[in-house]
Every structure is written in C-alpha cells, then in structure tokens.
Length: 391
Image (cartoon, rainbow, N blue to C red; front, top):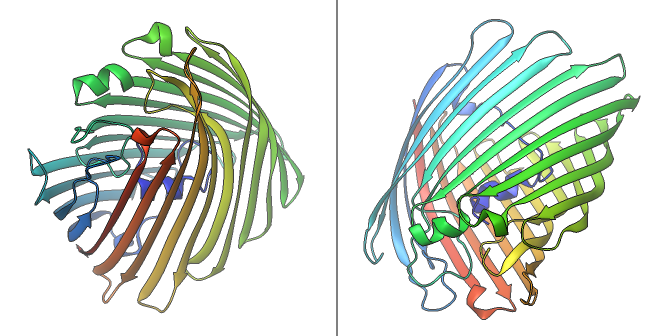
C-alpha cells in the first residue's frame, strides 16, 4: 500500500472503487473564499524507511503552510483549489535530512438541473515522506513518489425512480528511485456505470459494471492486467443519522503473462452520526490489489475490516480514532508460493480548538505487518503534537 495511512482509514468508509469523495469545507474556512493555514509539528517516527530489521528512527520537525479557495462562479457552478506544502527535517535520517512534499488539488462541480450534475477533480502529489511504507524493501530505500489522480462523475435521473451515474478515475504513479520505478511505475484506469432504482424512499437498489486497466511502464508483457466487475447491492438510509451501503459480485481479471482469475468482490459500510461532530463508521472490503513486489507476485487478495470513530468531548475538544485490520494473501507468480500477510493499523488523535483560528492536536499511529516472508514484516509507530493557525 502506498496511500497515507490516515487517509486510507477515511477512504475505507467508501467502497474501494468509490471514486471521488469530497469532505465539507473545514469549519475554520467557512464564510470566506480564500483561506491560508500555517502549521508546525514535532513527532517521532520509529521506522522512517519501513524496514523489517535494523529500523532507523528519528525525530521529525515539520512546517506545513497551505492555502485554499472555495467559491461559486454562479448558482450552478462550484470551484475549489488548494495547495499544501510540507517541509520536514529528520534529525537522524541517513543521507538527505530535509524533505519537501507538495500537494495540489482542484475541483469543479456543475449542476445542469436539479437531477443532473457533473463533478471533476484532480490531485497531484509529490511525496518525499510517504505515510504508508512499502514492505520488503532493502534498508534505507528512498520511497519518494509522484502521483496524479483524476476523477470525474456524471449523475442524472432517467425518471422519478431511476438514476444513472457514470464514473471515471485515472491514477498515475512514478517513483523517484529508478529500481522502484522499473517495478512499480504504472497507470490505473477505472470506469464505471451504475443504475439505481428507488424501491422505497429510504432504500435504493443498485446494479453496477466497472472496467479496470492497469498498465505498467516497464515489464508490461508480464505485469499488466484488465478486470471486469459485475456488482449488485443496495443503499439504505433509514434516517438522517444512519446509512448502510452494500455491493457484492465478482471480478473477472485477465493477467498478461500469467493465469487469468475470477474472484469474488464485496464492499460493506455503515455510518451512524450520533451527535454533533460525532460519528461511528465501520465496514469491510474484499478485493484484489496491486502488490509492492510485482516481481514475485501478481496480486494481493485483501480482506479489509475497519472502524472509525469521532467523538466531540466538548465544544472545544474532539477525539478520533481508527482501526484497520487486513488479512491478505499475496498471489505468487508461476513457481512462487503464495504468502499470507496481515496488516494492522491504529490511529488516535485529540484536537483542541481554543479559538476559531487555532487547532492544537496530539496524534499517535501504530502500523504492524506480520508476514510469512520475514523480509516483509514491519513495525512502525509515530506520535507527535502539532498546531495550525488559519487566517
């Protein structure tokens, strides 16, 4: 996995291929179109390279300025963009100690009518300090990468009870280290068509087809794959506080240079908002994902269970936590045995808002990878404090 662990827990609230999901404008940014934020943090990372042995730990000092714009061009069109800069200094990192990361986001949403809208977004990330590290790499391996993700979603109503949604996602990965790039640089495209029928006011039946294409920059004749997904399910919203989502079906996957496969696919999630700024979310996903070692393995069969909770302790203090448990199996190439692996991630945060402009937080994260292949095992803990001022 190469997505940030904190974001992965939030993304898991939605189906693994749910495409773009947009959070509301942060409370401190509401009421103004252009916002600036300046943050600083001090933390400790016990395993900055994600090694299985000989871990290197370090104190990390960070400065994180950012700006964002959220505004409407007219009554039907909303636009937003944001830029985040992260300046990280590692006290005990071998080699380069100062790392600079960038994230640029842009989005435009337009409503053609009350029942027809389009939503397009793009995110470009230059990550020099990945939040989730690749398993099984040699010591002190640079895991920096660039990633661009483009999302588009078009939704319309065919009649009073029937809806149509067209979705598209394009993700492009490019690793800085030549050896990693030769293995992992790739483009993933996913297109989907969803038909829904409102059986009851609170119940919507859904049928969905998705097509995925994974194309590697090098070694494509032995690594590329294409998948057809056929899914059915339902969305159930018994009240404004509670939602349930379920999809189940199968994936028919064609692998270049390896055996084809047909595998089950499932995604379940629920969310309950039990108070102001307080909620509990949980879910499960079963799917095939790209492995971090494509030389030995074709795919990873993943069972992902997750629980996320946010609780407002008082008007000024909010606590949050997430737990993800992923029993998985790496699918060996011809002549290579499958490998069982379990990844556990736990994250905790406590945030204090002394004024409308300030947020002060304490965070702790723990990652653990238990693998039948000892070189892929991994333990990593991070904890720290941060402050952010918005103006």
